[in-house]
Image (cartoon, rainbow, N blue to C red; front, side):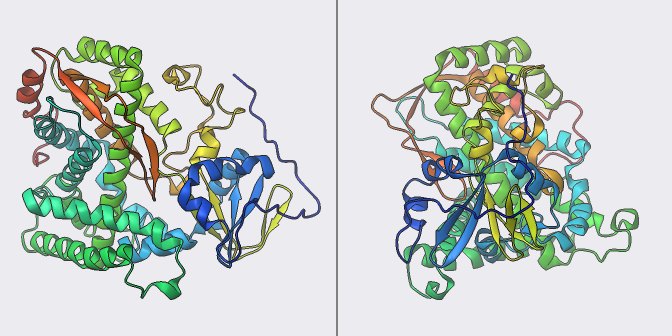
Length: 480
């Protein structure tokens, strides 16, 4: 492995921050960030460790050096959640663990952490297995299809049933998924539009205005039902409500109000639906192109599981599966661009960063850095084998530091169970002539993906029947 060292020396005097080339009058780099944002962002390190971008009159400082990115993560007080992406996100999903400022984060994290305790994660596994089996049973094997929509519906149902055990079904779920995707896509699109133009009846604005009240109404109705019928249903909302009465957890902090719980649910749902669906879609694409890796996956699944669905205790044994998914998260990170707000004057390498500045980072810059990853352009799951793995700060699909995603294990477990279920049921190939490209909003999805599934004889029905049973060791009340 390459020796990993910081490339930006300390400086005693401030150096000017270079500006990215290609800015247009008035709109700056907004066109590049809508046409091909990943290509634009990954071109920035050649210009400096920190590079200035402009969107209209606003400036954003992209951190292009992995070591400086690591320092930003560790100093969450100075580099607070903020900037136009988070400002727009708060409009859409409220103030929650994802969007709240540093001053509110410790309380919110303490009150929500019990919902992601390992004993709860074990219980969520049975929910995941059931939903995955129900979903996969309906996937077509007689024609090519785009799996992105079905994967969104699958992850939405998993998240819904993990959050509130009765879940959502039928037309309600379909409308809910559509509204979630609409609001998340709207965060990115609206972040590039000045607030002064919010009143314009643009299609993205209209879809946002219609979707947000429908989502809020569903959350309010479910919370009202749980308040009226208290008890542990083995789901996330039950835990959130029970936590409010636990003085050891709250430590004198005021409990979450219904409005705050709604915002937390909204954040969990937004984070737990699109990112996992995107990861699985990219995994299916990569494995369709790399039949050698697909065969390695099937061999491990057959050996470890023998035709049954994976349970909680199997996840650690599925080493090849986890390496493939980790490499998918490196090469095709669901989130490509995040902003932070600078609260105090500070330095990043040789540059003075004034308070009030907006900085940004991209996992694509860290994950593609050749000093952190040998042959970063090569998809190689074996780079994650014991003894080979890059340093921890070289892998940031879930961010890092005190604001690291609380649901990272939940999402990885879900993706692992889903991918092993798919490999048990089918082999798959890419439809000839299809051209896959990244479609970028807040979440990077594969566009143009067309797959053809081929059932594996004697596997699919066995997987469906056994997946309906709860995983071994599931705590009482944890089934959806």
